[in-house]
Length: 153
Image (cartoon, rainbow, N blue to C red; front, side):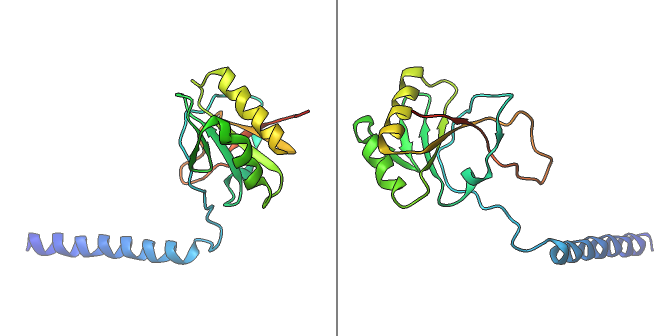
């Protein structure tokens, strides 16, 4: 008899879980999920004065990434330093002339300057340096990337 009660209680618990899942499936707003583009992961430098830049997560955003060992990527494609200006110029032609730069916190400053010079030479009208989030987003939430807009001359 004791097993029968345990089985009955298990069925109630499973029924409650199933009902909660069904409710969750129908109450989650459709079309609100943020689709992040593929990219190269780096350890971003922290900043206390960065602002949210949600456009950096759009599928057509142009992101140049510099890793800690000096490797450079335009989007997810590895690029040698001599090709960087042309690769950026080619990708800027089909987009708004905005460039997002992700730099590993351990990258050499000279390499960062090389990326910024290439972006300016390629015709970027706006450059935003992406930085680490000052605090973690709430569980279940996706926070937009943060960045500092640079002036180029």
